[in-house]
Length: 370
Length: 92
Image 1 (cartoon, each protein chain N blue to C red):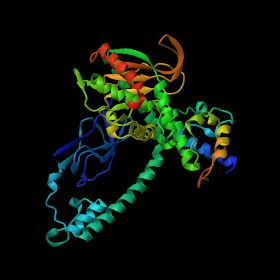
Image 2 (image 1 turned 90 degrees about the horizontal axis):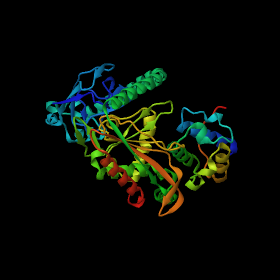
Image 3 (image 1 turned 120 degrees about the vertical axis):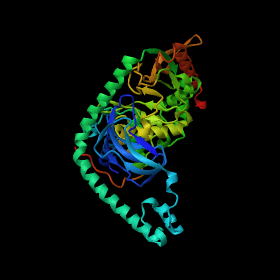
Image 4 (image 1 turned 60 degrees about the vertical axis):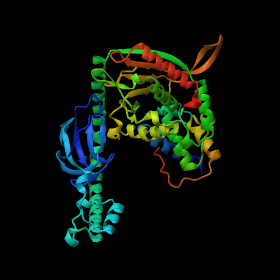
């Protein structure tokens, strides 16, 4: 038996309201399925499941507010499902139509499920879906206006609580360096010249990729602090997305260390608009191992970040600006970016941070290898 | 495609990438990114949508030539090869 609990979508989350169940008892679920929607301070989040099984019982009703960790539903592991009697044709049809045979009443010999039973079940599923869509549309229109303003308020509260906790508990230390981006940007211009607008890369993708690769060399910063330093295997980079009306959302790029520049760009194209619309998935808000904030445009040179607990580091990129640059006794004008590292002094020391920034700089000088 | 239609399409696509902004209030010579608060990510989304609707793929070296409403309308008018099927005019 598997207990499915209210997930924690960040250090600041204490509870969530179960808005809607997207599965019913008897439904078969697999890893990555979205099974419920939960209203949190970060908006309406699609909650994914990481187990495989059959939903046995839903323990929390729609509209109920429950604390993090409370069991929401009980699942049977998949093994319990052997023994369903169905004709081979019925099985094939059920697979094609995505019908769970455990939910179908068999009318054939000895209770076996027939082709007709599957057809009937499929029709029932379709009409239920249509009815639900109609209901949801009506409800949505009425509450949309109200939700936007209260969502803004909730986000503000979530930021306030996480950042207060950070400043209260984490002894930050800061390092900064200026990185010459001439080579990276020239490489990017060359690459983008060959690409259609759909496939073009933004400079920030190079920065994210370089951070991920530098973390492989300095894994102490890809970690959580929980009564000591806990290094994390997977590199899940939280990327700060500003909302137009104020506030930020920090969806994580999962396994950023395993993603190419193109894959990172695809991830951003997918995530940023959803973050701005406050429509993220639970997997994008948990297990974040480090955060990047990038000012992007404008004239502001430096950003000193506040670490999002329990992470131990935050990398801040200022705007890319032309600056005087001395190299080999010559003075020149170069496009540069100022990078800051905010890190948790309980977890690491300045030397570790310094190794990270040095590695980051060296990676950005050889963009072809990113 | 007439100039006015391009202007309306541009306006509609800007509204799409920056729903809270008011592109219908843009003056001809306003720097679009500054006035609407569009970042490089939004700008790229806008160019992708523009390409999809008009077939005009604007290369990076020409980004400076489309900084204002007047410039982008002129640029697209010169390069356009495809007429969009459905566009909903912005309200002025």
